[in-house]
Length: 154
Image: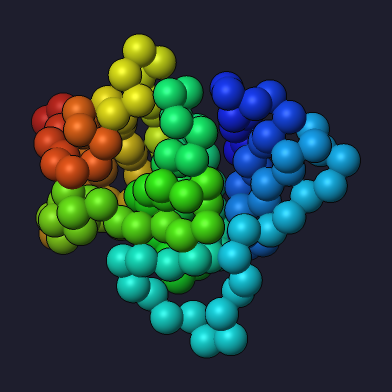
């Protein structure tokens, strides 16, 4: 998946499964990988490199503010926020809490076009306790989440 910086259309971000996050500031003439793969993967709630990202979104009001997701494989599964244009990534407090009862395997990210802090996350993996996956919703950029389980008929 890729996203274009709305403040500077020559800046694009590209997430490549198993190859990390990439950025161009010259409309694709050259690309730079964000961060370096660690010699030994060591998962924490703060990283400088996403090893197998799926989604990326750039805040239209602040191009240094990014959301990224990673699911399926890798050591950096989850919902990530960067405040420095992708140099560092952090799990917001709300995601740290909700991942314990849902999942940190996040395969889908949708952001409200009218409010960047309103977002939806989903996964193909079951939630904790083998509960079918639902949708995680945040209205404050990931500081808190509400879990919406799937309908009972699923």
